[in-house]
Image 1 (cartoon, one colour):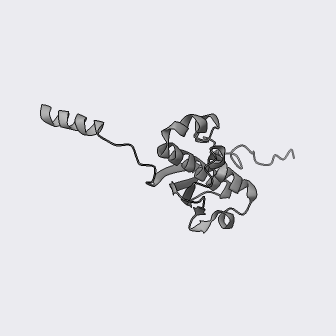
Image 2 (cartoon, rainbow, N blue to C red):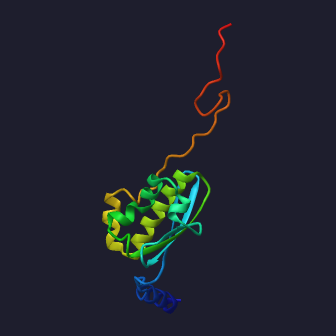
Image 3 (cartoon, rainbow, N blue to C red):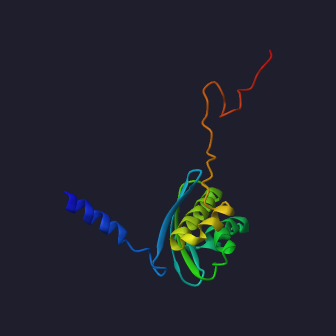
Length: 148
């Protein structure tokens, strides 16, 4: 039993950090959207659900949200991103992809973590849709009141 635990400890110590040329995978969530991202060295192309970013996120603000972590670190021309996103609307999906890219960047190079943390790119936005309450029309809206 002692030999097995010693071997396990030795194996854990010999784990190598990921090489920079390997692809990094990460997950991000925002509202109801979930994004899975693959990040690897390339020429700066970003694909979302097998479409180029400008075809999927047609609004410039959404494209800007997705590219923020790469542009903050000036890596937009050095890494390729392939993202698969499900659920939610376009704004939630853009936020989910941004978080996933940031997490993949920290896997790619752990020294980038403080810069991404300072830019608030690694924080999962906790805001969710509030549930509808009984006796009300929505989460907070009351039914119309009639005096007479």
